[in-house]
Length: 237
Ligand code: NAD
Image 1 (cartoon, helix red, strand yellow):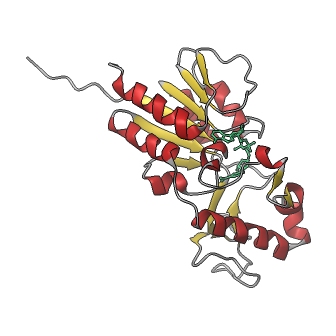
Image 2 (tube, protein in one colour; image 1 turned 90 degrees about the horizontal axis):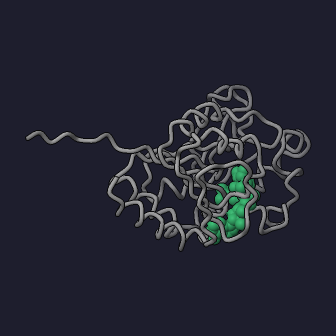
């Protein structure tokens, strides 16, 4: 008798601001397109950076402090358990590091990472932020002002191609806490094979068109995700 070890199924999870909402980090949607008290176009665009670097740095310094004070919730933690059985890949639109702090291994950040800074003359010069702030006058090794390592509205999304590839090879696909309105990120769902079972978890109704094999779970992430994870861990495939 031989024991043939089946390769693990590839399970891809696409997350948005909603998965971190119960960790106390507000979503766009729940704040009327305002991120806390700021108008997004005044803080999250290249134009904003050109116009007022101090304002933009101050905005992200506040977001960073908020993230540092937050902890992963039951939804982030549930995703870690999936690794017992599946080859799990997380594609997140979030700039927080709550997936990593929960213990997830493979995390692709489409929109950057709040706890890193980068050069304004060479995008490959990326640094961990010491403490919780980037200040005017903080420079990269080539002497340019450091900016947050964030993809702003109107900028290219460098991780997009790799994310499409990961989505296109998913055996199971889960979407959690994203309104699927910010492009190109939201377009990922169109790359998932038709036959792949898909699950979408969100407490609000989400408009998705033309997605085959989709099960909508109308729940908060901290409730819906642990339930789905238990189901997936207990199926016999
Ligand atoms: P979004 O704000 O457009 O949508 C959030 C979605 O989460 C909504 O559909 C909402 O119904 C849902 N939601 C709210 N509470 C939830 C909960 N408890 N459980 C599950 N779902 C819940 O967010 P988005 O689609 O991610 O796009 C917004 C952009 O804002 C992204 O590009 C992201 O980079 C950025 N953003 C990031 C963070 C973060 O890093 N935590 C926070 C806010 C915004």
